[in-house]
Image (cartoon, rainbow, N blue to C red; front, side):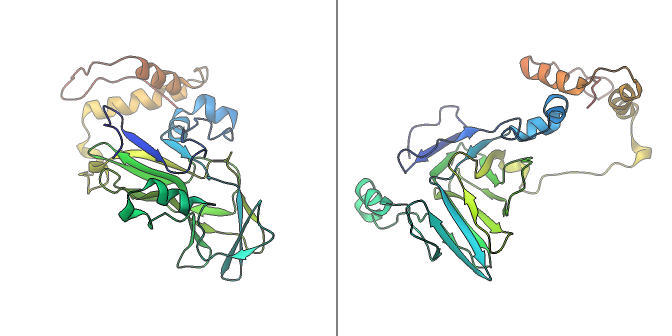
Length: 263
C-alpha cells in the first residue's frame, strides 16, 4: 500500500482530491491558547503540538432534534435526516480508481451512530503507520473555544488496519445548527507506540522507599519555584534546549543526571 515508509512514522492517503491536507498540530492549539500558556507552559504547548490535524473534507452542518440528527451543506435546499451520506460524486470516482472487486466499497462521509447525537465523520483519508506504531484519534488538544460537540477518543492500530481515518462525535447542543468548516481542524491524531497502551508495567513507590537521588530530583524541580525573582518559563527554555541537543545520561548512585527545571 503506497510507498515504503523509509523512516516516516505515518503516511496519509488522500482519496478525495483537493481536500485539506493534514497539518502538524499547532503548539498554540490553533491560535486559541492564552499567550502565557503558549509562552511559559511547555507542557501545555508540547501536548497541543503533538500529532497532526485532520480537517473536514467539505463545509457542512449538523443539527440534533430530539433523538434524530439532521444535516445540510452549501448545495442543499434544507435540512435532511442523516441516514448515511456519501461525499458528492465520490462513489463514481472511487469505483474508477479502486480495483474492480473493491469498486462498491466507497467509504461513506457521514454515518449516524447508534446512540442519540452520535455521528461518524470521515476525513477523506486512509492512514498507515510504521511497525509498532498506532494512532490515537481525539479532539483538538487544549482547544479553548467552546464546541457544541465532543470527539470520542480511540486508538487505531494503523500498522495493520487500513480503513477510513474518521472521528466519532457526539452532539451536545439540541435544536441548533452545528457548523463544520474546512479551515477548522475536525480532530487530531497522535502517534503512539503500541507498548505504551498494551498493559505497560508500572509500580508504586512509598515515600519511605524513596532514595536520596529521588529527593534530589524533587528538590531540583520544586526549589527554584521559591525564588520570587526566577525567570518565567524556565522549564520551557530547558525543554527546548533538550530538543536541540542530546544529553548524555550520567549515572549517580543508580540515578540519571539531574537537571534543574521548573514550570
